[in-house]
Image (cartoon, rainbow over all chains, first blue to last red; front, side, top):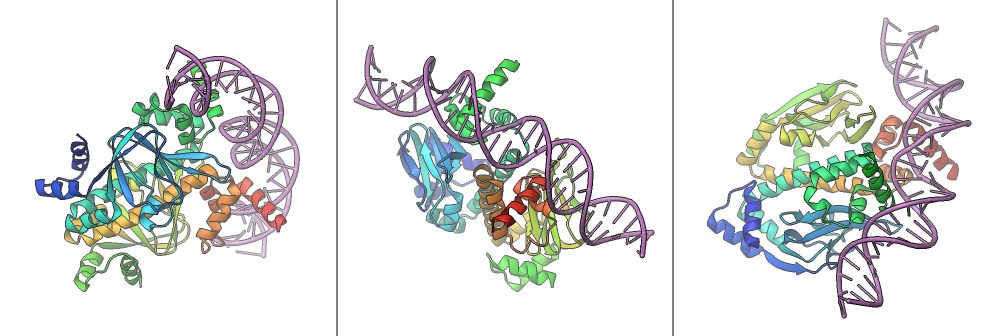
Length: 194
Length: 194
DNA sequence: CCAATTTCTTAACCTACATCAAGTGCCGCC
DNA sequence: GGCGGCACTTGATGTAGGTTAAGAAATTGG
């Protein structure tokens, strides 16, 4: 059940009483997104954090020559948002699209801030969530500065083993920062090595 | 005065009473770091967040072929730490070095966590600080994926105008992710364009 | 189950940036 | 105040990964 999944996700860092759980779940808004539909598009102000209960989303930007760069994948049990836009409430820079039919629970920024004051444990939870995202983002930056495409691919395989055979490979190529053509070549070289 | 600077830094996001200020400042530990000395080195566990009151630090990693990658500069009024190590308390991946004689105020992880429970406003403050770092880190990742070296240099100039003529240019080269040689060439091309 | 579309592969050629090397200028230190 | 070393420049050459193009394979939606 979707609510169990999100409550279990919170339990990783904070423990809630029954009443607190009820306050929290009352703030959530379920939503279904069909494959290739968008939760958020470039230029929109991001008003929600989304928690995925089924399916998979991808967040990406488009650069000025039209190339897409995947910033994150969000399979079940992950949070996703355009943090820049969510924080600043300015027009966003990301598109968040469903790679398959997906169910999310939305927590509005307004409700999220209510939680911070009503139940301070939520400030704790989201601080930790943000810290972990920061570390992941920094690590990815380091990888993009210091590793070859092949090494980044290997890291990706280790870190997201469940995603790997599930995702069109052009999405993986975009995530690790190469063209689909180069990715294909690279893969065939890897196979030949073995 | 150093304490004024850090208290003013906090005021950007939270308001403290006199007593709270005193509790906070009692947790701080001043330290001086001479040019080319280290606040933290690779493999050490990071036990402190550092707030710079004078001078300038740089945080960098060294990749397996020995190349340094600057992750952040911390001039006066900035916070710096190896977040990965600080959070996980595992051996760190960053070196934090003084680019000139520098004064910092150290806040130990232990004291930081005491603050979270004693004065919940600090959880709020560090959540926001972390959110802002996350957005900056994501933006830098996007830049490194989608911009040329010259565009990244222009961004750097806009974002850190005070640092630019203050820093050895090999440090800037490392930050934007090119070799000193290429950076030098690039600069001379830019000059010629004008 | 078929047509349309999207995804993947392969190949030839191109470019941004790296590497190596040699030289110049300059700043800090005894 | 001179010299040792570091920071910067410039040139020749190397390479990871991009671009363009065209066909083969796989999905998907009807």
